[in-house]
Image (cartoon, rainbow, N blue to C red; front, side):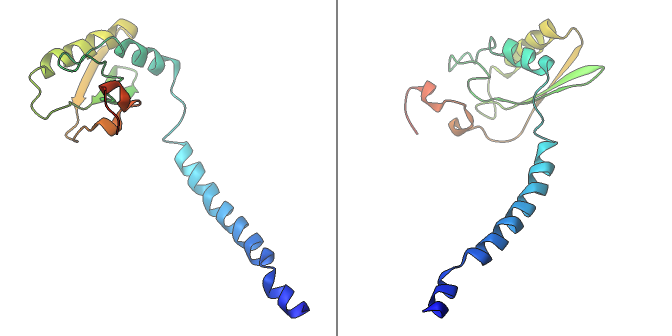
Length: 135
């Protein structure tokens, strides 16, 4: 019965595997911590201003739609990377101008808006339920 209890007690192997898993998770977490650093106050202020920029067809902000993918604040300019809901959105020039204007209202420096080629989907939204149906 003692022999049965020893194989039955896998705590030693799992205890060994936990530190190994934690050890492997720790470098991954540290590596992930650098690119996902907390947003600066300036970035949060820019994102807050971008909540006023509306998609004219859908009637939701570029933030609510998840179109703003990245805000990079550099010493000489602000870079905003965003998506469009459709590849050839007829309102793209207006939305780009509105994003620049909102960004410059917070940071009075040049703003560059880069349209990313990725496809947008409602799953990118913080709350897809805002579209009026569930996913």
